[in-house]
Length: 461
Image (cartoon, rainbow, N blue to C red; front, side):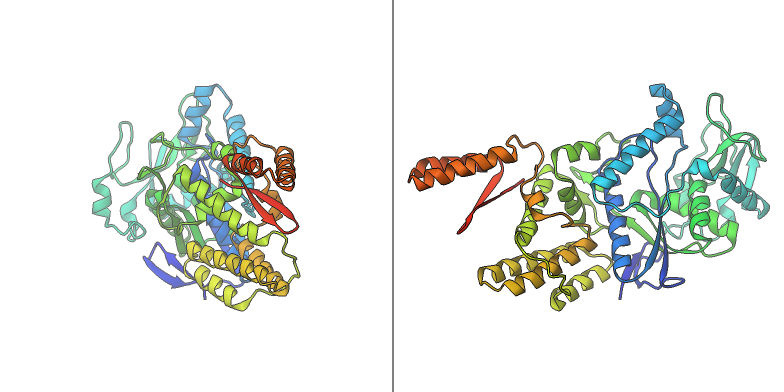
């Protein structure tokens, strides 16, 4: 039975959907003003894995991930580069989709954009004002956090503690330092929309409340995002949504851990981020995906280039086990399937699930060495089926094992020619030349496997 760690309660809880087998899942997506970095990639891959697992155990998942296409950072970047805001956001949205596709992520069922939900945002703000949860100050509208008794529950902190770190910036007319903006009055040269409070644009937090409830209803199953969104963004979403609708907003909150570089959080604001497209230019995308799943989703993930190399080598072990194995569309081998599912039911424990896959690969190799081909077929089918839940091993083994590992100089034709030259040298008993060719290929990241019927090769990180 699936259990999920609920950030709201701080406990691991049995997953019970509101209306099984339907499951509503909303994930906070990207603010599209720049290229995605590895932290964004982690969130994309983590929740893609969650969707795959939920669907694999029979749930009808409606997966919604929003796009923030109006924001201070977007406006600033558009002004800096002299590009219309719509063109800027379209360009970086396309880049985000390209990154997600390369990482093997399924497209969301719905991908709402903030600018496409302006009336819903205005309607929700109006509800909050009518209910006494928000107030107008000049052309701005603020949420009064003291009106919501449970404010701070997700962060696990009292309002007084949260208020201690808040402030009122110059020009703000809010009554309490902890209050937050729902609607910003229009500024000269910035995009704006008409509203009952004057022309302006929404605050960031209200956008997700309006979009998520529009797509999934007032009360849905799972809300996810990065750990940095827990407070204030998700805290504010709860306060807005529950005050506006009078209903419980979300049952299970999931937050993935940060990606860190040298033990410091990776982020654009710190300037220590590496873009996904730069990483994919040098590393196999599936190896990057495995790397992102090699640590439990709630734990910090420390990024190193060596880690990506190790992930590619680990992936090569799995593909090598499948190389030449027939597919008989066999049912999964029960012992391995049970172990894999137990790991995934334990709050999506992907490191433990991956260990089951590597045990499977070792068993396939043993069965092959013993000449038990039927056993190889059953285990290989098991490996393919279980791996697909993680979005792995979805291409022919030869494509991975003989494909580019990144910045590789030797092409496949050159490698095949060197292997043929080595075979000729061995036939002529020129073993020093044969050994030199093997060493040359190994230096270029190509590993040879001599078999009775010829030599196989694969690239290694």
